[in-house]
Image (cartoon, rainbow, N blue to C red):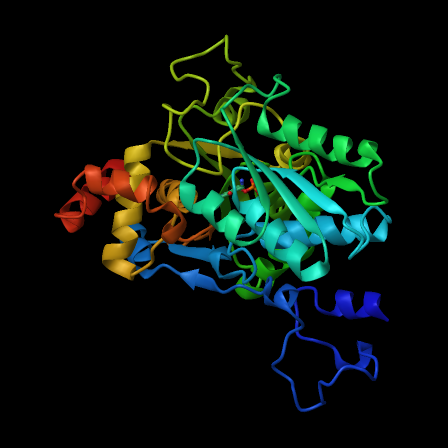
Length: 389
Ligand code: PMP
């Protein structure tokens, strides 16, 4: 049936026995995957040699930018959210149903691509302070894009609230039988469950369960929570150190370190995340989402990372390893180094490379250039490692 075909394409090669006779694949076609969905998951775990040499630990990074639909870990999440909605009968292909989402970009890009592949429309609400590469890409993927001014989560104009409203308006309009579905990545359990079902098991298999720390930033919290739940709860790796990587202006660092979420009005040294606090995109938030809450009790520590450290790390990875990443990945790598330096030599630290630097040319990589890092990258990078130690 169509359904079993879809299932078989989830994170793996096509299982030919699931196909009906009308499909032309033959038994010899072993390396073929079913559509863009088949290009999601099973990403490599990359040994970052330069960081291992510098820290005396083994630094490994899940290359999530190699997910083949929207090129980020959000491919896993978008696919799982869509499949969950289809299973509940909330979405039906080719009926004009529209998926609405509030996103800083990555989830929207994954939803837009998968929507096209499965017969839906996509309507994406995003803040207007994000790199234009992401909204441009959404346009090219055929999504409707609403870029809205940055607003607090209590405001109806916040991009997440706006997406929820737009979905309701669509369904309520009654103009056709089509429906609006609000994917709700921040609160939907289908988000962290995607990582519980796929990213966590992949990391476990790729390391043979030999890892000492798991380090990740949180935007929705789905990645850090889902992987931590798999390793600590399902695999009983109680000694695993789970570390949150957090940019300036995010309240999560204080929540993990001190149990207090500083609100916009109760600022400590650093302010609420605004456009001026950080150029890092995709991680750092000032509320506890369901997806962060799902793994909160499993997080042992947090590392706060400055924009400058992230820029220097991004430059280091190009200089030494030829790895070109975006801002949240750079924050993760700084936190992975800090974590490694706090652990015994030879410890194994796993983190995640969320997206490519190509999605961050106009903002993050421009800042790297403005900091003059391109001229003398090696020296600057070495200073960074000394500073972190
Ligand atoms: N990096 C990037 C570039 C992202 O867009 C996001 C999600 N907003 C994350 C990291 C964080 O992932 P999660 O939502 O699972 O916490």
